[in-house]
Image 1 (cartoon, rainbow, N blue to C red):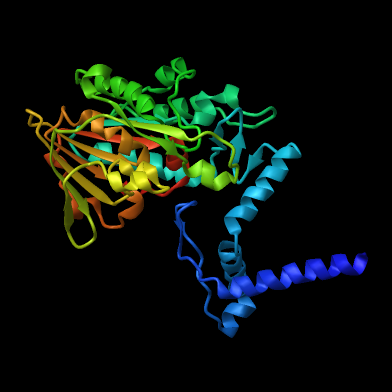
Image 2 (tube, rainbow, N blue to C red):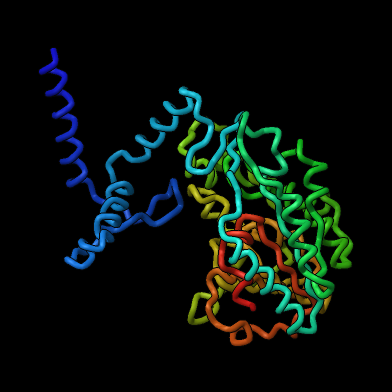
Length: 369
């Protein structure tokens, strides 16, 4: 009996090795929405330093045959055994919530300094809002004993450091007041169209704009089968899909995306082809790009400059009737001096809007110091 068991395991092991050699390797994982590790090149120097083996380990982990099925099986078994967190994602009652926490205090300090320096450099009204994560607003949905840091205190502290030149926007209270509504996706780290809308109302109050009523915006469902980043990252596969909604457009004259050598023009701000893919959130304004410019049909001469992360993608469509032009900049993908790529003084107002995780843990507004 023992010999049979050994032979079975050996046969499976050999079969997997052969399959790993024969099965073509993918460059991109649609499930995880990322490029997979490539086969590293070999040199004695890289081998001795340990870098080659680390990259080889990443390559094997990324390209192992039936990888998605193994990840699903592992997560399911761990869930049955009582584990409620995987790869930085908590699982609650039919919901996935990212474990957001600060990692680099120096980087945070530099990001704060960047906004303050910007506000002193340009004679344009500057507004700033930090977007709390679902882990803060939906604390009651976290599994027992799940840890989370106090995002309200964090936001208050950051706002206090901004000084008089930066006008801060409080959306925390309105999101918390609507915490029982569907304002964050179940399987993704972004807010929903409804979460973006109630924040839009607060932003309009700050910017001196009359917010349009929800019923005026023609908000409609565009998908009922959205599985987002947390679904991919966690390995938990028994969560219901999300519903995606979006306001109608019709106020756009041109949508221009900077591609390094120049702008590429698109007919609409919505990319319907992504609704047939795993990365459905890219329906909103497409994928992350360094600079995006939107010309609208709004009867106004006001222009808005927005420094942002991807939370802005489902938020900006609400503002199309209020500005003749909106420019979005993602500083994570811009390494030039800002004056080389844009004239800030052309704009009526500047809005910095960041999810709390991106603002804490990525190099973005620090580039404006």
